[in-house]
Length: 491
Image (cartoon, rainbow, N blue to C red; front, side, top):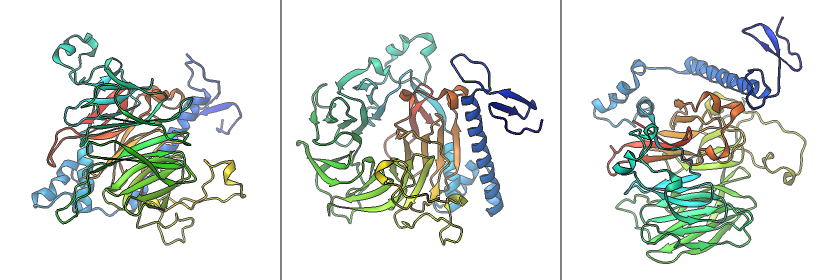
């Protein structure tokens, strides 16, 4: 048997035999089902691509003698000579790898799968958006509550009560699309997708008001609200003019950017400063006055509060699902469909290279060829047709997400880390400066391919959490839904 392809059969290279491909069903024990073979081929292609990339890196990289030291030893070299570890390229890479090398998963709340969540850094209490449309306030467990837990749930790492038993703050009319807590003002921002009922923006202050008390806005002529982004607190130098006492909340909706403004202890004022021809699915603040918008048609816009104008600065290769700022005002990380997670720089808006003769090198040594087919109207298939020419990325991270628009990730600029969960439920930590995979936490053997995780286990919300306030030595961990519960990856 020479292993040639026969329709309906699979050739096992280890057993040197052909096996009939069966249709997978619940309770099947054979390994030659169509879904399992598809998953096996997918992992084989991923391993081959990773091996080719490592071989190319070993061939084209010139290393100095100190790079053969362990990660922790390399990260201490700059400190011994009195320099910061972020100055040289090797110290930057070693520092990020050393931080990621000590991360271990710690389950905080088992059997609790929040749709979205955020944490109050002062009290360490969680605000949780559940699948039933309720918003709950989960507190740290007391010693008495720990003793009353069943024997198999008395792990010392468990810190939070079951989210289903937590205090309910409100119940909204449709599925929740985002939840954010602003620690500087105590504002809780919740948005909904809409459906049978129109989408809403729910603004409350759970620290001062009782449950059920909030300001609720129902925008007109808007079918869906995809995301929201309250303006975070930015550090301002002594030579800068202080900003006015305004609080902003941006919301990305269908063909609209909504902006909610509030002065100190005032009421919220809604406005719609920008209209586009496509949906805004991702938002992030780059500065106190500049907002980045990620759209369904692959375009990345910036909006300036001072000039009230917008500009199309970059173009991704697929519909955008999430945006995060990187280590500089001009750099941001963008994720989308078709296995794309890339680092862009607004100072490099050049088009993606199509041939090897272009003056711009391909990302990570990978050549991307765009095949042009016969022209079709854009309105017939807006998700598969890209009317813009993609921009050249600075880095491309190895990432697996073909068609899930709800997977999230986060960036920690000071540590130089990017953390996210792929479509197989794996928690992956990359280096922000090199794009290398530093750590991979597998979900389980049954959680990939044919037994894909259900929708309520998707890691829509991934956050870096600074668990000890103040200073550069505060402990940083990654929190996400993983293996059926809220999990923290920490030292």
